[in-house]
Image (cartoon, rainbow, N blue to C red; front, side, top):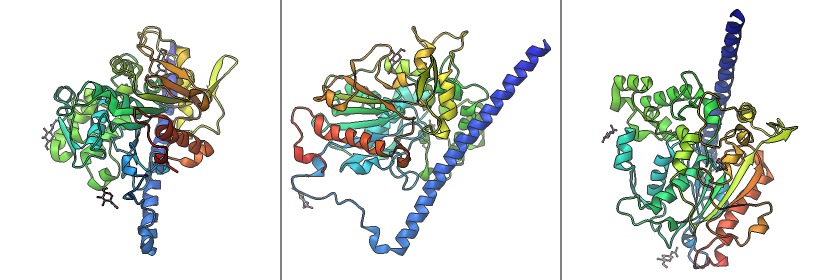
Amino acid sequence: MVVVKMIRWWILALQLVELCVSSLVHMSYGFYIFSTAVAGDVFQAFGDWFSKPNVIVGEKVVESNGSTNVEDLPPIVLVHGIFGFGKGRLGGLSYFAGAEKKDDRVLVPDLGSLTSVYDRARELFYYLKGGQVDYGEEHSNACGHSQFGKVYEQGHYPEWDDDHPVHFVGHSAGAQVVRVLQQMLADKAFKGHDTSENWVISITALSGAFNGTTRTYLDGMQTEDGKSLKPICLLQLCRIGVILYDWFDISWLKAYYNFGFDHFNMSWKKTGIWGLVDLLLGNSGPFASGDWILPDLTIQGSVKINSHLNTFPNTYYFSYATKRTSKVMGITLPSGISGIHPLLFIRVLQMCQWRHPSDVPPPFKGYRDEDWWDNDGALNTISMTHPCFPVEHPNHLVVKDSECQPLHPGIWYFKYVEGDHILFVVNRERAGVQFDLIYDSIFERCRKHVFRKRPTMPDHAPQ
Ligand SMILES: *[C@@H]1O[C@H](CO)[C@@H](O)[C@H](O)[C@H]1NC(C)=O
Ligand SMILES: *[C@@H]1O[C@H](CO)[C@@H](O)[C@H](O)[C@H]1NC(C)=O
Ligand SMILES: *[C@@H]1O[C@H](CO)[C@@H](O)[C@H](O)[C@H]1NC(C)=O
């Protein structure tokens, strides 16, 4: 008896140590990013101060008329993932590490860093088309937030329609956001807009979160339902932090970085002190109704979302699945220490060993732990290739880019890439030459190999 008790205490102690270490690592990284952004801004401000005449230099001249009219190019829209941010947030920092500068017409929307896939998709529509974000009456009532959100006075692509489609490139959860949006377009889910799936010409996923990830359980989602949180875990700390951040509602801070929960009215001005108590107790807010990103990234949550998403015959699909593990004598292990970001290292290791609790029903029929061991520290590699659960969508594994030209629409082309989950975002130096290779080929594909009916003129291609 005593021994069993001792062992229990040991396990508990180990879990607490793990929690402390991973909270510390995540908080330091968050702080590091934040201070880099502030430092960059301060630096820029000083630069501007000392060399005033340079201010205009560097701005792109967009109004050039002529044969290579930028206005004729379909925009390439880069959609960030969890904890991500769009252009204008975190000062001059770029989530896509400056990849947006590689082409003349790239948009980088800000969709909230922790909002649900559904809410992001709604927001993305109005960001492009313009107007006030309408989250839909039914969904808003069910999730306890306002039906209407931010107003985009001027859409970033108001002419968006069948003949003026867009290219989407989504990182991580951003890839799923884009698929959900395409389905909404096909379902004509935006009041007053006659939309169709053909508004999207191509979707490229960089480490796309199509099938959920076992990491959500390590961070604190319950394996039973994939929706509620364990009482003590990393995500609880995150939840409390987010509630306080939104409740204190410090405007300059929120302008700098926003979790995207403004439609939940969590500010002290709107809910008062009792509202805060309610939020913390879990009676209201996004964490109570489950309308935030983590439940959507569990395997159960993804199965639910995927069950009504289609792959459409006129859209081109391409996906890069990242992996930082390899098999050594039948055991899946992290492949090398140096190539894995410190933020992700513990998780790569833990995900390699993940076992679904035996007393809990599996997330879907046919689930096997070993299929999910390969990972990139945030997502399981199996989840990133192509949508395949509950039904497999047409797909094709790409080894060399040249073998899949011409590309055919309606098929998920996918490629394995050795790298961790954040190799191609935030910090450009880490990926080195791979960074340019990957983004250059994505942009080149959008501009040269992907078109519908009227081919885009060759002189529309950048450079
Ligand atoms: C570009 O062309 C449009 C119409 O063709 C014209 O109205 C506009 O003034 C031109 N802009 C420039 C910068 O030449
Ligand atoms: C949030 O506040 C706005 C106005 O401040 C109000 O119109 C809306 O109904 C509120 N939403 C909720 C869910 O309480
Ligand atoms: C989802 O899981 C199934 C079952 O393990 C798998 O066959 C499929 O490849 C996964 N989906 C994606 C998007 O990879």
